[in-house]
Image (cartoon, rainbow, N blue to C red; front, side, top):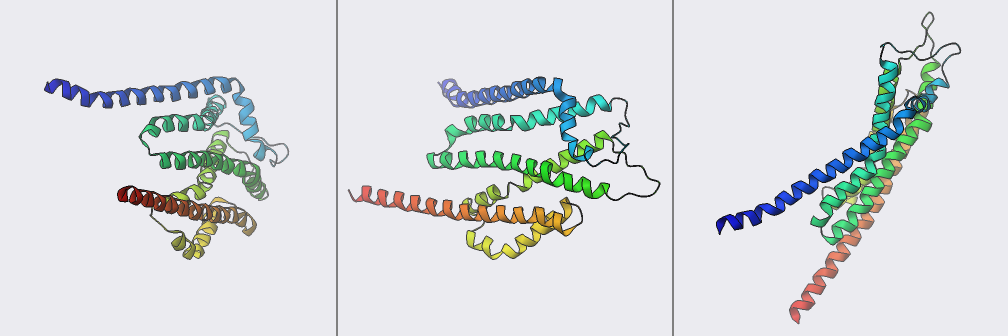
Length: 261
């Protein structure tokens, strides 16, 4: 009898572990499938990624490979990271499918828009870095020529820089989601964040100074969008907080009416 009760308690845990394993396998299979589809175009993909630098390289110069196997490994590494970025929506779907049954209805209604917006904002940050920041960065650095020094960029170091910039700007563009989560979790209030706006603006410019070339225009180009993203997160955080309070008050009134009956 005791063994039967113990088996009944352990069975849900086993089922959850099996489901978690299956979803991890789905992610691995999907990532592998995307990688295999992109692998034949690895060199073309690297040519696209290196276009911002190639456009400003001095005439007669080109990128170099300081390792014998770099021309093979570097496009391979880029293809893997690109496959991972492409797989992010699928990975989030699997995470959502795993945790959704354990969430309340209002939590499911809240989580789905946040997940979708976080993916969109991450890719928007990458696009912002590729189309705007990288051309400005390389245009500025290539404009500084030292006498007797030839400008030759290693393909591996270039890729590391680009991946770093993509990740940095992708995370920076998550500011609205982070702001909304802080408000809904009760860690911060819209009023408190609004009072700290001056410090947040200064922080945006400090981040812009660290991630962009050392000129006021480039720093402003990153700091202002980050500030606007914070303001949008503050606006939607206030809106969602108000709706949450209204829903809670409506539920309390409904419960009181049921008790009186």
